[in-house]
Length: 261
Image 1: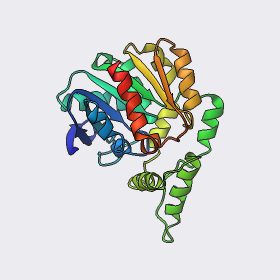
Image 2: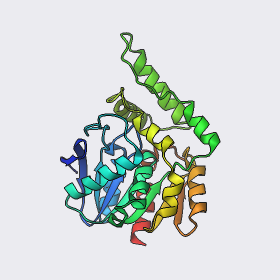
Image 3: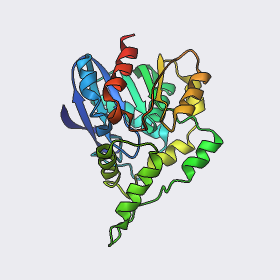
Image 4: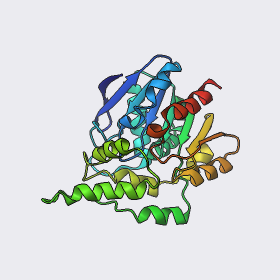
């Protein structure tokens, strides 16, 4: 795997690349980074895919926008990154927040850039789900002299990850969240304000809705497939929203199965 930077709309964008073949852009959930896919990337590469895992603006090693940005603005910025990478058409996989951005790109003016789309956990939220997520503590993690903000971050991730089993993944992803304590929640606000339903209806690219039964967006993903029964659907058993760490080989096999098909 090689790490590099390209120039984007709001500054530099950190990129992880590996393998050869058709390019597959990976867009992570917030508040993580492209490292979210590290466990699954070797299997994708072995399957003949050129993997390009981005740190979305404001996360991981990428520069942040000057303030919270809409999902549409992120999709527009993503199109610029694809240009900076010297690519024209790509396959795109987005997970959770990344899925909202991927769907907005595939539904927007630059839709022709998306050859195939994988929506890995779709935030097509019901009122009850919106209320559930609104109960999370999405606020700046102000540093405290006693370190209590560190425990607050950990407890928030525990709340968001019922059924977790991978302690190393929990630690790694919590540490990633703490790298941007003043803005880690910006993308959540963008998702809650965005009309994903309208995007799903406009998408023309061949699409896979992909989830796992232990994901907190599993039911929402099933609704997305019901809205677009012409799309493919796949789901792994169990797991949480850390499914790539928990079942990397099975996760990659589902992705490769769709791309090869």
